[in-house]
Image (tube, rainbow over all chains, first blue to last red; front, side, top):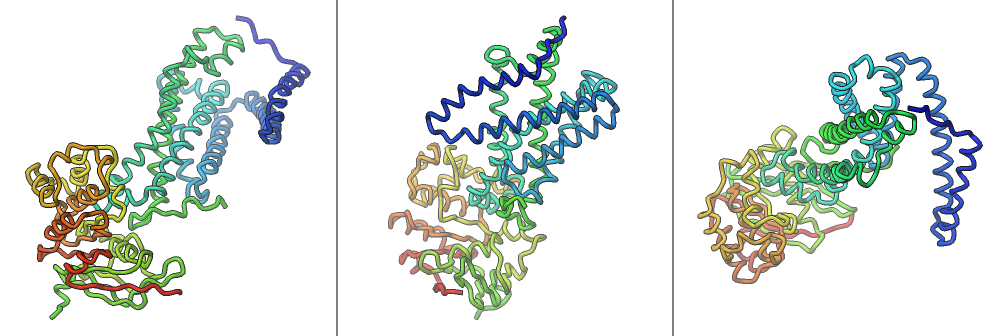
Length: 265
Length: 218
């Protein structure tokens, strides 16, 4: 296979000109989206540019402990992002969420290391950084949706929870319908997406690999592995963060703690 | 004569404020086993808060509540709650779109109540006593009227067979016949302590003691 064609900085800059078209449409219809759109694209450019510089050195050094450290940074960053987007109290929920993401990283790491790639390969920057990036990055969405559904649902329908408790349910039994709803809301879209992969959309990783010159069949095998692990990651990380965060959401009297939604400071 | 041995719930020098209203001001009350107590007050005067205090969902600002001589704490809360069954004011929360029978049986699927599982015969008997057709058991709970939902809630309270029964506006959606049937079911058992938050004159007349609550600013 051929190596991929590099994009020159000038071409990339000119590529940004295509944004003019959506910009005009959004401006004409007074959507007030111009400013957030420009900020978002500027942030995306700067963030990816900086990550590019980091990754360049991480790939250059390629020590297992530096790679592991980078994964830890990703886990902590994901913890902050998820807690902020779920509007949960940072002080109470950062740790349970980080534990959820870490449990997923360890379990999926074992799966990929033992069965798919071997630990020697997994610890290489070439595999570890993109694979964990995708695993952690893709579980953020389902964790945000799942945790929000669970705790907003409990806040809204607290009386249902109390009724179950007064009917003899343990705390775990009483929150069962809320956890079920949380898992359904978070995981259903992933199942729906999985069923249409290849038909309606081509996943990013595979497209990226093919653009970079990989054999399509190799790219597809990687993609299948990553889809399976992303699904496992989404369920595992949500499940563990629910399990651990319950301690913060209820007091010793099994009362739901409404302060969990207080401002993130 | 009221003795401490027969006292099942006791408020001692209880103070409680909520949303800048004083609900309990040095409140003392002994509720005897088998007593049928009514809490009477205008809406928003704290009837539901008192029920929440007994269930341990709300906390006193000072003073204490004792259930069977024990103050609620994190160790005994599950055991003491298991002595109480509760009919909430909002009966929509009792079930969803599942069948009425499933709603009635759900509490008996919890590990604590598995041994209390009532047979179909008993469920139908209690339904009849509350002026409900047995065919209602197959209907979807969410399609019931407010009065029917209220009676299903009362059925669950009765079937759970707890010594303390808390009823929040138990007859608000009931016609006179159904309310009388409900009173017969709950007010005749001398072993059950029934605490009802209610405005209903018929219900108030059937209670053995009425506590009137007055709100005051903090």
